[in-house]
Image (cartoon, rainbow, N blue to C red):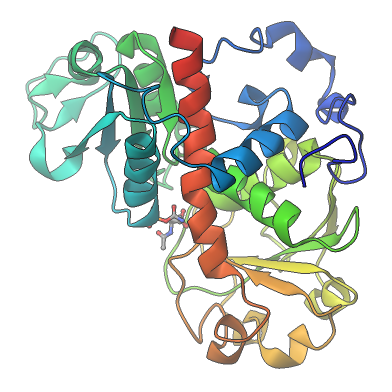
Length: 350
Ligand code: AN0
Ligand code: CP
């Protein structure tokens, strides 16, 4: 519902949803309409207004179909993607933009990075030059680059997206970086607002097993956005899977999954590898899979996952195919989230 009664986790429209993130943030905050990057929750200083815009975009997706006329977005992928690749193109097309997609890992030159590097190895081009050139062809650039999960300091320094911001000369959108996936989290926030039946629902982010070591980007980002929005967030995971505390300030952290599920309104499942024993798989206990028995403990909770998901490893078929699963609606909201972000960037250009 759009209107004066609108609220975000019980907060009024005039309240700052980011008031719990500390004073530093407000010092670096951009003016509201100047949006030259979208890499974290802090690039949305007005969650309630963002959600209102999302409602408008959902209702009338083609109302801004000339806003992006003669504007081009480059979507640069260093890793695979289904949803981000298609939903961001769809969002750009709804706004009248022309998308160009490049799988730079397969179709581009191998890139070097870092200052002063002597490029006598595999890399034919420096990221500095490649990104500056992309900026000549594009009005907005999106980039996906996963962490290598070998060196925590390197991954958490976010050098790749940092290089894009430094050298592109145009606004940059994260399509999932080493430590965050903000377009996913924005869609998750929109989805929770859409399906919540109480002002401040109980939201549970639960770790679930997976055969491969996965990034912490999705859970980091989900926690960051939910905490910034003032949500009631519980994070359940086996010991050793604590996330970087800078993302979880305000969340309750527990190791008893069943206890966490009690009275939950939303269950958000995701695997991640260890942050402390960086990139390691510490637990393979199948009991952490989300199944019907555990969902019975909840308050008829909606089931969420960012997808792609491994069925009967992360979540049982009966749950993901059941009446409380909203994973497809969640994926549909990726278009809405991307369209609000691109719309804001385009509006700041005119
Ligand atoms: C990725 C991850 O966990 O970050 C992408 C999720 C959107 N997932 C996989 O690699 C399976
Ligand atoms: N959820 C998500 O970002 O999916 P893709 O990796 O398929 O883009």
